[in-house]
Length: 165
Image (tube, rainbow, N blue to C red; front, side):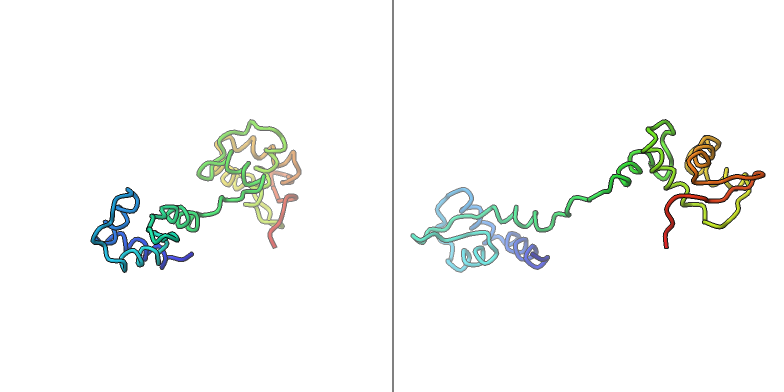
């Protein structure tokens, strides 16, 4: 199914003669005076079909076919992505009160802003964490408690979490 098929159907329905012929088939009205080639055009686009007795009928199910073919498949989200979408809105954490397993998903995501092997002053950590939530001290404490950041003498470094390679 491609865009050309959709253009063909829409093109036929934008013409008065084929639109009238299709409408007459949908309504079950007599299509007197409609040239057979008009029905053949509709059939070529999948909008009409001729039965064994030579009687034409509309096939409006063609619209459903076209819609299904163009529909985007539902977005498959991992469990972690669902948690992040739940607790992060426009990149900001909506709450810090959550179950530990979900908090770990969020903390691993936040810890990724810190480069492994780089030492950060506490004020730099606070600035980075404030981008996620106003209670940056709680975030910093959670990150240290969960082993995602380590601290010594007000200097922090990333010590856990996944690393992109």
